[in-house]
Length: 175
Image (cartoon, rainbow, N blue to C red; front, side):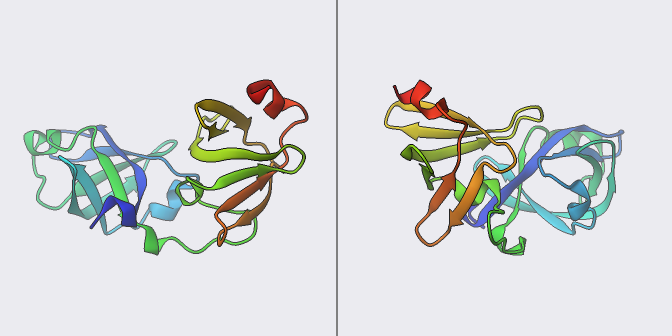
């Protein structure tokens, strides 16, 4: 499995007990969507390695206590600490309209309704208090608050993200 065919689910945050169980941080909007995982891919030395889930229990926030097959003690579990977790992108339901997955729109051209072409979407910065779209126009960075109503159109065929940024915001960055 290649990273290009997957999406980033989160990471192995810490040990959970002493019998090989670990705590996963699920970097997703709704962790309950992943309450019945049967396998994940863990990035070990740039190789996506499958790990089969023996048990999973959702915890507070975006954490889950997971026991993987074959990890029966603390030393074995330590080898996957702070490693990134992936799932195949094809398991995600296809979104339509202005809904999108963060990884889906990276590389899209961002076009503001009043300013015009802003640049290329580098990443969606998923901050709890103030999520942002990081857009690069050459060497210049434009940070657009990812607020309700910002995205007016997602053109998946043309790889364009149309937005209506707060008035004057883009000009502050680009002069």
